[in-house]
Length: 243
Image (cartoon, rainbow, N blue to C red; front, side, top):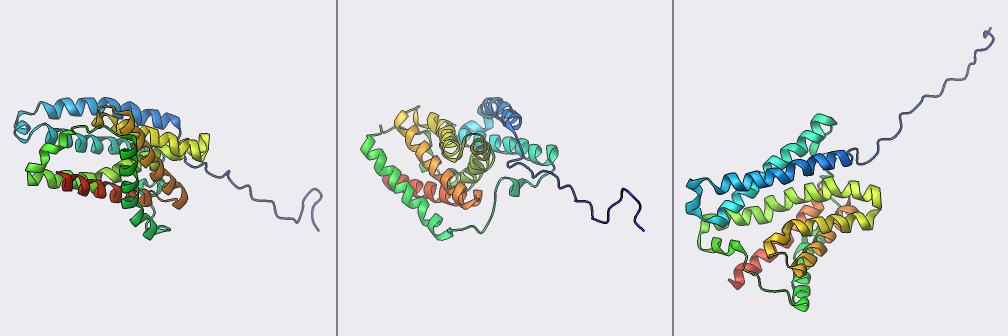
């Protein structure tokens, strides 16, 4: 006999609410920027005043400072994801490999570089003397520069911009605004390299937005990194050919 008030029906299992993606918030983004900007200034000052490095020239010092800065910034990013949330670093930032459309992405980087170069011709972008031209006469320094431009730079920048920042902006403002907004931040990062030329900043923002679109469509930060690497490699090859 079933006692009064009881039921033979199983009680429904209460499921926890689905985790919001991305799981980090704007407080984490402020923490990231709050460390990144001061640490950049400190790194440039410290590396620039190491007398033993002055024999290699200011471009080498600038490149070394950027490498050290990237390491510090990603230490903070790793700490946010692992220490604060206990989540895996790579998977949280959308690093998925292999990804959809690998062949298209592989060819997309060089094609984008050609398209951006032609757009620069139409916009009549000014010819700005970039400091890294001095590295062309030093093979070890040039190899370090190529390693940074083709591998380390795209990897670090895509994880930060398209892996960490863009998902938060897309969640808040929608795909188009999130992609373009992240692209604009990407353009601002590189604008000082071109004396704050608005034409160069616009072209870099466009390239960054394309990287963001690839990240959004494939769901993979690795895809954006591969396209970014192909883009940089093509630009570096053109730069060396002209020099």
